[in-house]
Image (cartoon, rainbow, N blue to C red; front, side):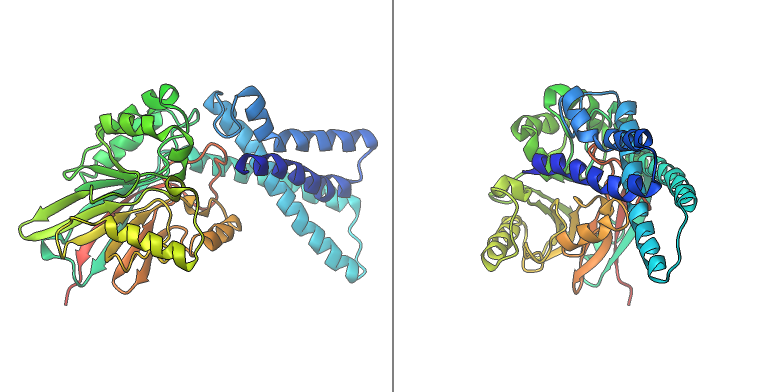
Length: 393
């Protein structure tokens, strides 16, 4: 179904682009054909990747080609969006009996094309550059004093692929290690590709260093790429990953008599697919969230790793979760799309949210970027350093 959607969308996008961009230009027959063909080429990224690269989403092609095609694809989409807005303006002017000359339309579209190409290039750059460090402090009334100042580096959505290779991960690891964190949490979507294809690229993760270890949970993309093999491979790299729930298999960090428990849930795709927010599903996920901490010391300060930024649907408050770390949204990628992403994720897109009194969710906008849509506009990737603080009287 997912692949079918990405096959249909380009056709619909081309039809819309033809009506919004090409028709208003009133070109000659030859010019109309050429413009329509260029838009078809720009919007045919997924078909090109599938045909030439062997996979519509993670093609076996040079990174520069993937980024370059992503650039013209996104530019075509942005130009189409601008043309639709301009069509609305022209319609309103038409109601006021104001005629817009064809020459003005062409000049406007030319300016929009330049702007779209510039924004797209910037968005691609933001998607592939080494992320900056963002620092977040979370204050609690009930944080054990021994953990005041405890620092967690949160990474998510690394998406190792043919367009995100070993040098990128080496740079990310170096930047993370400079932070000298107490714990590193990676909340899913590690890689797009098979172990035989991508393990060498992911090997720098073995150099991640934190006093209390490197922990993670599965994302939906792990389900697409032979997770059993990747589970073994990532374990050999020193990462400990939650992929399901049996009994507590996380870690307990102690500072004197105080304890901090790290638990995790596997992505819904590991439990038969996505889930609806109905009463039965919420009850099942609430039980899973509670079981994620079975065996943890009573009264331990609980931190949950879960790829998707759902709190209500998994009963995070009922499981006494104090801090939940999630990803999945990529920060919404860009304006407008961000609203759609929010609607699918309990209005959680990026940053810190208080989902219940004294309980917080941090949503990483992603430390990497999916090759299928490598664009980020006004939404940079990040490495997040989260510091736990005890509220002062």
